[in-house]
Length: 127
Image 1 (tube, rainbow, N blue to C red):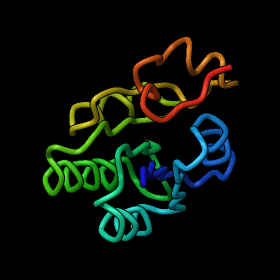
Image 2 (image 1 turned 90 degrees about the vertical axis):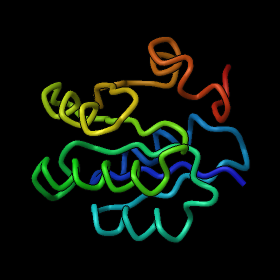
Image 3 (image 1 turned 60 degrees about the horizontal axis):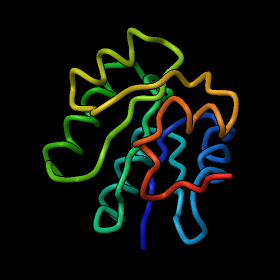
Image 4 (image 1 turned 135 degrees about the vertical axis):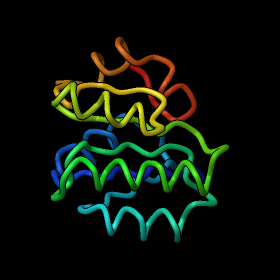
């Protein structure tokens, strides 16, 4: 089983990622950093990617702490991606341990595949 953990306080992004992945890939959606940490601890054996918004009902510093925690516990885990509309938040999360960042302004699946082809190579569908 392959799982992607999306930590974002907007439901539209979890739905967006669900539409990108292959059948059988689970997309867990955490609405808060606390719930994200809880899901990470519960499902970390199957999580292959974490996508985190820069501010999930909390200051950016709290998101940074969670990224560092995830990276410390699962240093060999797949990518942690910062997905924020604020480039400053993305830069801070990359400095904390995210492999890459993208703007949460991606409008559709084709643009996501075009701009971030390697990210979803294992789990994404293509037209």
